[in-house]
Amino acid sequence: AKTIAPDAHFLNMDMRYCKNALVDQSVDGIWASASLLHLPKPDMCEVLKGLYNAVRVGGVLYFSLKYGTEDQVGEAGELFESDTRYEGEGDVRKLYSYFAGEDEVKELVRNVGWEIMDMGEDDKRGTNEYITHSWVYMFATRTKE
Image (cartoon, rainbow, N blue to C red; front, side, top):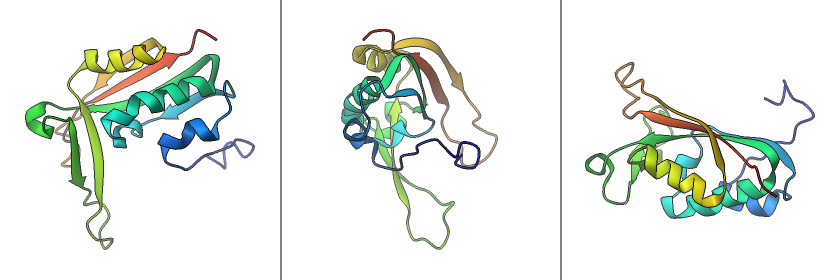
């Protein structure tokens, strides 16, 4: 990304601290593909609020999350899974927060103030052994000051 956009500003940080690093209405868009799902569910609303404040009116947020049912991930909708793609690095475990369906994701986003532009499901289960859940993606925009 830095090669393609050498003048762009990139942040590599814990997303829970974005609200402290970004000036209100200072960015045109945020791309959070497969990022928010690594936050504990109770933290997601606060992070989405921080991202909302950082985006200019008319700016866009893209994100993707995983769908999962309670029997797959437990009552809290969260699961620590080993990621076996990192051989030789020990037991790499990642937190994944799963959502029961479209309504749960819509409610989370709308409660913060985002307006949903587009939402869909990407289900590639069965294409390889690593993909075990379907994904939901969303484009949302900030329409109010």
